[in-house]
Image 1: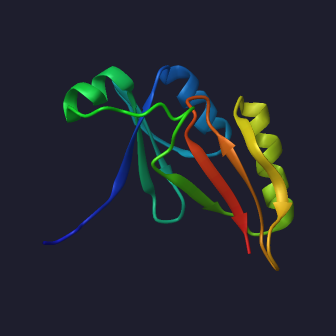
Image 2: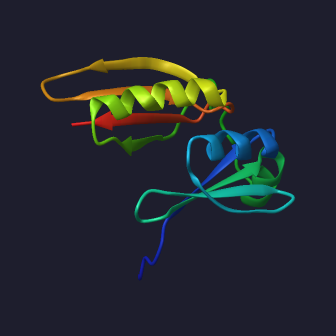
Length: 128
């Protein structure tokens, strides 16, 4: 097998809200259709598709978990300093996200936080 690319497909309930949230955090917009909004993340341009839940569920024919209750994955965003982690905390709150775990040190040389987007998808912002 030849694995060329990997991306994420997540579900949301409101494309406008999702587009506004990720745009406010500086994610690079990758396009939009009637069923999804898409962003690029990081230096490698990791693709993150956000589909309307009913559309993705119909296409993959599996149960989609409620990210407010359970998560299959937590994305990690690297930060270059503790100050940048703190900036993420403010930016997430200003954009309408929820801080799940406030910025703090954990272990020697590790600093980070966990936040959720408006649909409950979790992200860890991490500096080491």
